[in-house]
Amino acid sequence: MLLAVCVIAVLTASMLAWNLSNSKATQLRVDRNFDNPEGERALTAAESADYATITSFERFNGPGGPEAYIHPEPYLAYTYANFVDTEVINYYQTRYNYQLNQTNTKGITLNYVANVTKLAHLHIFNCPDQSLIDQNQTIPWRNNAVVFYDIENSAPLMTTNFMSSYAHVFYKNQSEYQTWHPEIELNFSDCYFIEMNFQYSEYYAPTAAFFSDVYQIVILDKDLMPLWIGISAGQAVS
Image (cartoon, rainbow, N blue to C red; front, side, top):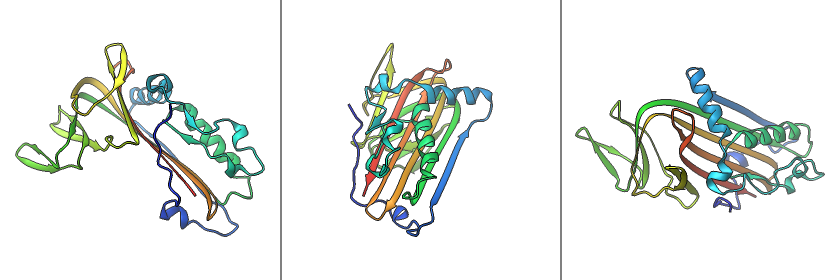
């Protein structure tokens, strides 16, 4: 079973604006942000979790081995990630380095940003309305937003849209992982909130390029076991 994906005929304006000359446009950014060794261990645990088993999704949509891009025409082997873990990061970093030496690759981008937040109490719920009343103030949300509420500080930590058909959410119910539904409200104590954003793209010509994008939130308990996983993965190809 693969994540639902969005395949479009035209890439984003930023990709189409890349330099079409013979020079190669490259961008590499890897930011793993944490405050202390405890946070680093939490992020490493989130990157090492067995998401294939938890979600029943394949790691990649498309070929995921080196033979997929070590090819006379590597743009024929588009590979998309269905979630973010260490193997996904390593695969695209290796692929990025390989494409640096390929003359037919005009542009390569790899961006990975991960942030770790330690929380004493976290409340997760769906906000189906356009606003949420908090301490006599109206705070606007996007419709059907998932709200991550920092109970200790009486403030929303983040909102995000995991209600689309391209997103999948799972939570640990006792010893098993189940699909999370908007009507289920959850409270966690002494946990880690980890936000992961991964983007990779290759550009060859105006009609030969692809883009893989995964936005992922993972909540770990104090023993660094996943409690809640939200994944939104998208594709673009031209």
